Image 1 (cartoon, rainbow, N blue to C red):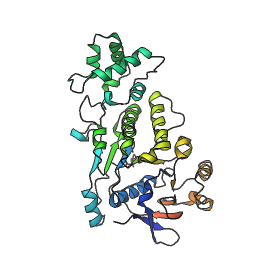
Image 2: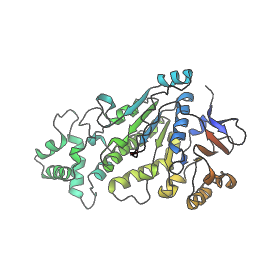
Image 3: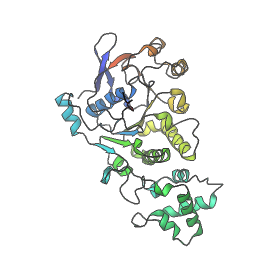
Image 4: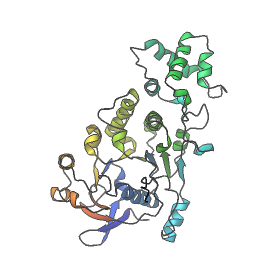
Length: 360
């Protein structure tokens, strides 16, 4: 396979358009308004990354758009379909059976993340926070009782207060918890070719955020291993908002900002996809060296992108409001030169769907 990945055709010549696979070792910003073909186009590129590289992909998928990345279309060319079918692609979902169940071990989470889940402040809630530190040292994965029961039966009154907090917040009822069993970070650590986290299957934003945070925390904790990964965050404005309103949302935003600022040197490369650049934390966007822009009618967003991505020619940015579905501007290190592209066909099935309107 070549390092040049075909993604469609150039608008000005109908020649094949390529992206440079080795230059995904930079953060990528991917944006387009609703109906622009943003998600479809991203699928085209992820398929090519799977075909052309050994770069493990981790997809945080809040809308279940990439849950069929392991299923080639019948219309896909036979050789490409066979290669994709041979890739190790794991789709983790809430409620699935066995190792495909998307779940997290609470006591293995970073201490600050556990505090965010429990809405604990290390100063204002100092005694409970300290108790949580001690829980991690004494509660074992092999314990066959659930955490709440274990805490409630403990002699330490602060442990019992933690149990009360867990029950009052409804956290113990989450389908997310592994209770000592196999969890999502075990799968990610095995470095399959792609791991898709179907975050859209959770009943609450808090569970979605906790699953995403657990994975990003683990990748950051193991950063010195320098295992290259492409971390795709779809609908990134919902996971890294500048005005995050809960402790959990703030912890997730802070981790994404940290990875954006420092992750590149450790081989943690972000691809952040969003409809509205103005809704994403500015310290994340400013760290991106690759730009994929589909149709965007907001003059405010286009002006902001022009200021951040000086390598994208203004005359090409200005064409974005006129793009048809599936047309995109690519600029930055992963494009040999700024180019306008009509995206090619998907090789795997799309996930997600619109809600249909019944016809009388």
